[in-house]
Image (tube, rainbow over all chains, first blue to last red; front, top):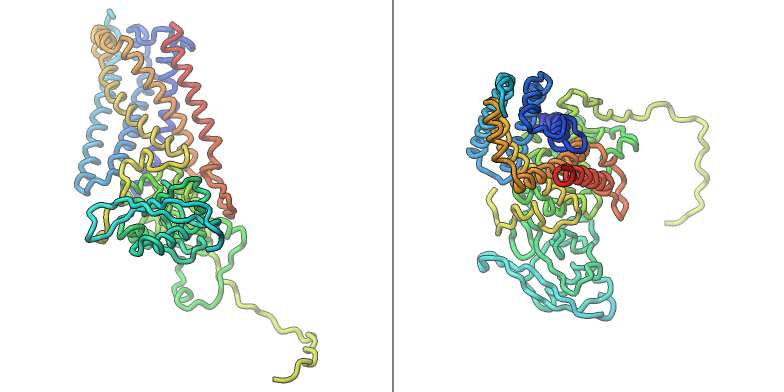
Length: 123
Length: 277
Length: 144
């Protein structure tokens, strides 16, 4: 009953994304009306401030993992409903898993290396 | 058919002769419309007046056998249950139910639906084999327990829901609203103990996880079975089962034989007044 | 089981239209479209934002590439897609876990289906998504 487990995690990931991405959208794009991180959240100073915060590092990695899982599971669903053969289904499963893990590893590296880069002056 | 003809309507029919036609094509037939005429009545008129080789399935002509499911003016309906007047059009376009192969004209090949239905074991599964083979008594079931599955038991297996479902449109491995709805009808029947066995069949692409609540199945169901509701309730059951939170109750018990002694003081029957052979 | 007849599946047309009789089908199609759009944007986004790990200069370079009116419009569309996908996602999670669809009832014509039962929820979803999208639009284009 693997599909049932994958689907339940999909819903759980959706709930996590709702909270974390909602927060992210509020900070980054409701910057003028809410100003949670000032009006310029994309300026280097603001980015560096979040990069050195443990809270933001952890939540960014959580959001990355949840969003990659949620998005790739949805994509897998759409592809599977187009009725690929058994071999192609296996390829899609393996391919999407590898791609998802690779993106997660890359994004996690960026989140961990960011505090080091944040101490550089400039921008 | 009773009544004087009101006007002429055009039956725009999807014809396909296997072995002769390469592709289905539309043909127009004009017939007189009489009051109260259903699409099925119209098909009989077309067959009588213009197209003797027209093929379709119908039987009870009263919306209970489920034979005459067709695509009528763009929507899956029962031909016998659809008044021509309710279509509010002078053209009645009738095609075979989509998402099934066409055998001939308006006759779809419903076997994939019935195969999926059979795979989900749409009958009571219990552990008392002796009683199942040789029933002695009925099972206890309260009206409240009946309510849990009664709605889903009204299904007449017409296939309209399968024709409307967007997932059935692309994915032949998906069981479809009718088989899944009927699996839930048995899972929620208090006399049944087959949830575990059906759960195994429901894994993978054939299970309810390909349903995304487009809701079209419930919109077109001619008996109000609401398969969309059945499938969402089934998902709830399966997820609760995954989290080990599903309430497990034993299946309905066998009703006991009546016991006790006959009353002694029952009055004797009155003398017979009707004589003769 | 061999096919006896002429194929008649609707295919992808069945996702989009195929004769639709309730706006829930459009919500389903839009949910898929916004999901795919968000996935595509997100994959690109991981690379763009990873430049912060290489210092302020590479960050500024990346920000320069993704600035300008076309990109701002694109980001607003992503925001609007998120607003719809998230709020409709809440609705789908509630429904697909078996809530807000109603209890099994005796079907009496005209039938009260689960689709009718969740109509108010679906309308609320659309209104909330629209409000959030408009709020974002204000922030993107008006308040500067």
